Image 1: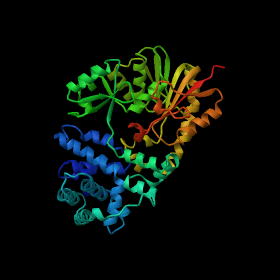
Image 2: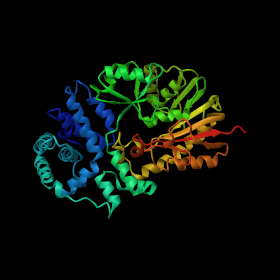
Image 3: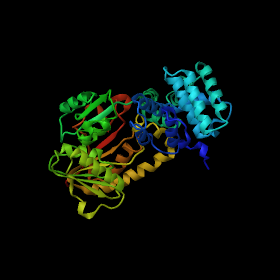
Image 4: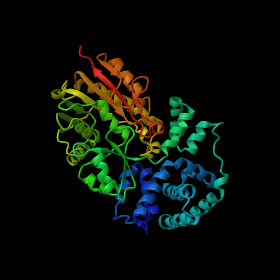
Length: 458
């Protein structure tokens, strides 16, 4: 049982560093960083803007470089690192991240606050924290890393901070050099990409509104409705254009999925795994809010979030339905849709820039559970299509087992389906087999996959 001394609410001072350790402790238990950060990134919790930026940098930086930080800590700690209390590991990681990656933070300042945290949470262990960090500060330039030439897998895993099994999988898929580039890109801070809600505003009008609110906005490279924002004076959710439904946070690659579906005004469209409705509402704006969209999800909570998002963005043609996509389709919906989007649950390995904790949460066995689920959902989703209709299968992963292998199996078992090359997306994002594929290191977007299938008329 965890003692009261280990509870985050016993911290005497609320600082970005203490909050970062609290968040990382929760992440190590399986939580995701972004919702936890959102709870603190307000003016009430951290009134100083610089403190909110520091908290974000400490949390995401420590998560992105956790593998490299742990390599150094193992080199300077004489005991068994894996047996160390998770909270102490995270105090050390946050402090070491500052020593290694934040030039403006003096070594004594990072060490001193780590020691003070340990005094509050782990009485009697502050001397250990002090000794490990001082040892690390002295030896940072002397600690060797695996050689890329002699052992590229270990080098990429340690220096670019990815689990060895994941590096091995990507080397098999992409080769050594491209895997190194991918892992480097995963550790970069991703751009803040947003989607213009054309139901209410044009991209040029939105750019003017955002710049008036103190942001720098530029057109995105790939997505026709996208903008890249920087220099925000406050979190985007606090800006008037957000509250008024003019803008939605969404990566460029995610935006392009709706263009793969290519819905037309007046059509009947189904979003099988709609989630919170980010792609669903994009489909509505591409349809100019005319026609019909049925948005299904297994989670009533997500359906409620979808309804809230639809109201904020003014998408009125969306009909929410709670339904398990692995179950038989409701009879009333079979064969009723011109276009079907099947954005299946996946490992999320294409989003490691934004969700670095996924690399530490996921183990090889987890990946094996996704393809059977994805095939089941996709096979059942075919029943919703009209003859001659279009179905788009999409994921936010770059695992071929969840992408090409799933499509190949479903096509083999459904002679009435055919794969077609998408036309309404950038050619550089379509591979030789006619599949939509994006990578952080190639396109500057999250890693997404999309396949366009049609149901034959005969």
